[in-house]
Amino acid sequence: MLSTGSGSTLDTEYPLLCRVKSLVRAFGFCVHETTGSPLVDLGVMNVNGILDVVYTDDSDIFLFGGRSIIRSIDSVHSDKVMVYMLDDVDDTRYSRLTRGDFYLMNLLLDKEYSCGLLPGIDAESAYQLATRGYGEDLFQIATTADTPAAFKTATQSWSSRILTEFNVISSNKQAIQHPKLLEVITNTGLPSYESLRQYACPRTSIVHHDARFNSFSFQEPRVNEIASLCSQWLGWNSAAVLCQELAASLWESLCRHMMTSPYAIFDARSRYLLTPFCRIQIIRIGNPIRGQKRPVNTYRRLKVDVSNFYALAGLAPENGASITNLWVDQRIAANIFPTCRSQE
Image 1 (cartoon, rainbow, N blue to C red):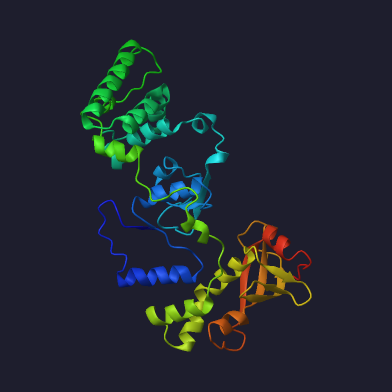
Image 2: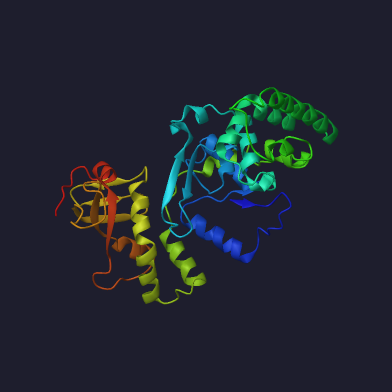
């Protein structure tokens, strides 16, 4: 996702960027250039089914429509992720939040928008304020007030209603307690009209049923093009180095890519897994080895001949170098190779 708007100075023809786009397309993925916020476009595409999942660490994605999110657990273990599905939220309190509720909670909890006015505020306090109806009210103000003056008048009334309620329930244990909360619900504490407006009505380049997204379909990686680009741009300019690097970083991913292809066909007699442009041969399907730190009977170890990948890349592997080992979820293995029995 490339942002070319909102004050960005990104040059979409910058040589390095052009190379990255070429490599992304060679892997079978699509490139979308947005004139608005990339996060907003990703959320809109996710909620409309154009994207199955969004990889981001920014919780604002839920406000912009995101429903299926992958995020890294931490920067140290970047290969370990958590998957969040909005439809699977068990806590009925959060599953019933409206967009306005999310809007106010994000303003209170996100430093990007709260400008640090509420250091240390917890999610429960933000939740209590948002679900009293004030989140939906503020969201309506931000989406309907067409001038800063109208916004100021509406938010003054909004603040007065909150202050009145706080005075009435000040002795109630359920009253929200935070040292700077009352500052935030005044006009001086709120972010600017422009910020709240942009947050409530984010700029997006996505139009539902946009013809540009007809190309957002499953595409196979073009192995020869990937090899050529890596040779040109990554310094893998000898056949030996190219064979070594592609075997270490690409072949396993291509195998997994083929296993998720809607066009994959498995020939049990030859043990070939075939797609329109690639093929691999399943040499052996085994069980997890004892002592491996993997759940028992969850994964299967596959021994695969990837000679075809080398041929597509215009390379000749050394003896035995065309064999790749990988672990595959047993459900995927059983679905793709139903007639193959474990051989270990």
